[in-house]
Length: 73
Length: 377
Image (cartoon, rainbow over all chains, first blue to last red; front, side, top):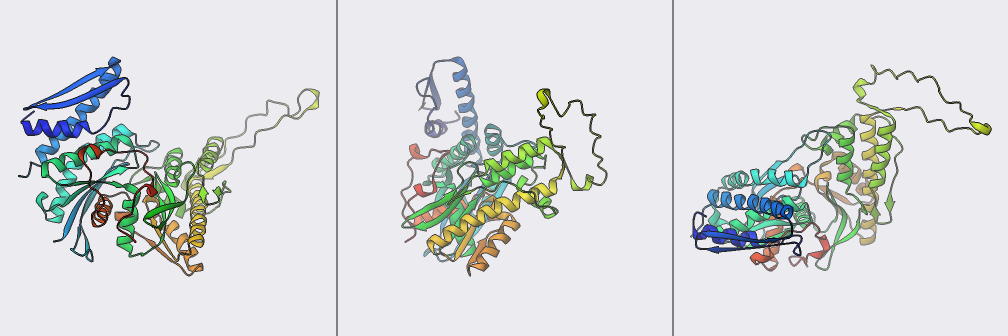
């Protein structure tokens, strides 16, 4: 991510929505410096693919929002 | 210090951004910005959740920018960020919540999750000045008759299956009316040119209503008969019936049923008949609630509330009861961001608890009476 602040915001925003089938797919996010790590445990490749697609769409949305509206001090 | 709220709405196919300002004592309430974009699909189709979310993600940032410009404020001036928590469609709701959360963290502003129905109600009350009306909330996703009592907007009656707007929208698809600017709007224009009232099922169940039966009836009617634009009627010639291949009397002299000859209906007559029927159902249930509650005010909110025929029928009923009918125009009837900002400011005034980040979820089902209306007596 562009900065630790970006990684932290993304981790917080994307952690709010719970996965629909926690028994079959688990996802955790955390920010370490400017690196955003998304950890997946999934029972099938298809579930993994759909979740990753969804999370990336949201991640793009978060980053675009942060670019359009910079942080206020 | 005036209070300013940013409202973000995206529960169905409209993405709306609004900025509302309340004076210190709440006596002056001003709309600073109200912008919106609608996701419209081709005729004969409806909007699907994922595609709608894609549309909202594409439009929300430019709309927020436009709203800030219209309001002539900067992000620093905003006191609270309000987003639609529900009810509505999951992916679109979520796409808006993600932006709301990001802005809350970027601008370090508190955040409220607003009930969509309450947004409609509070904006309707603000714009029309209705003090304590029975509310008819009618849209593509919701159909409820609501009255306020003891800190709750109580649902007196509602649809037991689909919303009236959903019935109208799906019928528009069946007869291939365009979705631009909205299917209901086009039904209304066709209905104005309708002349014949077709007998359709009328389904009021006490305080509640049912619309899926009338839709099924119409689906079958359209499938089994010929439907034309009224303009095509003069040039239409019925196809010559094929020579009767079956004897009308079968073995043992039993008569076989003969399928009725297909009739010709015009889209105009069908639209007219559908409106007259479902709107009468809405007026009946609203009147019943008014009688129960002893109210002399009606407020119509929600996208279907734009319909002038519905407004007219409601006004007629009110005149007969010495009551007043309030309605708003398309800026506020149709889903918008300003109503979310307005409800959010009401919540702020009523000291409703702000949300922690982990609470800023969305939900497809969110009952109107689940919200504690702290800002009213």
